[in-house]
Image (cartoon, rainbow over all chains, first blue to last red):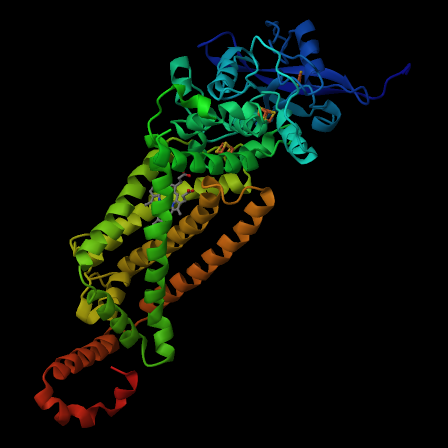
Length: 269
Length: 275
Ligand code: HEM
Ligand code: SF4
Ligand code: SF4
Ligand code: FES
């Protein structure tokens, strides 16, 4: 691409909710960023421009804006933030569609349900603790040869493949009215766990070896903060970038937990 | 699976049990009762097409009041379940924070409305039961219910009670109409969510299809509710009272057989009503 004179440049405004550190007050700053049409500018490239030119719209020099990103192709989830009021990945938010005209404004905020470390950078430790809570793994640690794994039908494989795509980005939790920000990590164990780990319960219970831990996972689902804390607002499925059928997973785990509880009622375990 | 018995679990965790009982209580007995109750009340209208809504409604009320152990049924079948569902409902509703401002999707609105109709429905049920069942006529614009003058006393209550100003009629009328429709929405949407809660509708398609069924049921109930509302709001109190005193004297006369033949000739008009 060698265009000598450039008529495709426009200046857009990026309004950012900033915060200097945990517990510090939030404040807003707006930056003007030049972008070129057809070059795939995204939120990250705009943030890079701001990092190199940390001067606000009013001409005041400020600190560079902090953010986090990894893959830049919507598979790691690190760059998740609230864009124009809705949670999504910023790397896949392209400026040619989000801000097509001169002077268009894009609003960036950190995720709402995870504690801010700085600016757009949040701490999503709780998400990974939630995966531990439901034992989201296949237990194969042994000292001896395991032999071939269990057979899987193409049908099961298709269902599980879709569920496997979760990248733990946290969009489903950020958009959920039943999921709240909780600073005290001791309370994470009993707070509503959110859609992604519920879907992971379904995912690992569908795996023939993973199902060894099925009862443990379903007991966790029946405990405080488990699947029944979901209020069926179904925002999660609308905001999952991987189009994971989260509401189907919630219903499937609801059914499994019902059956599990009835079994427990009669057998005591 | 047998390997997981290494840690002792409580038979069924209480939070889960309470959630499921809350869901169940909303359907049986509360939801089932709401359906019966609205059907009974709507008889004030469709009765008019036959031999008189006032008579039909009185007949229904007499039937209910002839139920043995009525108070026990009410306490254990209605008031306690509603109290249980409402107390937990408030608690559960407070654990959520609606975000329709940011995420204004249909399902999210329904989630929010489920909670709002719960709050409003609770106030309505409290006023409704307190005035018409417990006789707390000291409440604003209230008048009581009398089983012998079932239709006229109900209609008077809904038309604003002892207060004859237009304001009372308007406020109580609005409370009843909005209250009834809110609870019908709450039941219909509750049936939709309950199917997910219990894991009956799993696929998105199943949830959509069940949604049509619940909407249909909700609309049918709303039709019954509006019928009953219009029937009572437009009821002529004086004419209804006359019908009721006639019905009452018929019953009294029927209880004293020696004078029955004497009045039989006068009763040719009401004999058709099979009572
Ligand atoms: C005529 C009265 C009522 C009926 C027929 C009724 C029925 C229902 C039904 C069927 C559900 C669905 C349960 C589920 O999703 O599994 C429900 C949920 C709910 N009800 Fe009621 N209800 C009534 C009164 C109330 C009252 C007075 C409140 C008080 C605020 C209330 C609050 C709630 C809440 C918050 C939910 C959602 C619970 C959740 O999603 O976890 N309800 N109701
Ligand atoms: S369906 Fe459940 S998990 Fe998903 S957004 Fe709604 S309340 Fe949250
Ligand atoms: S389920 Fe979807 S939205 Fe939720 S964490 Fe996984 S990828 Fe993100
Ligand atoms: S940087 Fe990995 S999803 Fe955006």
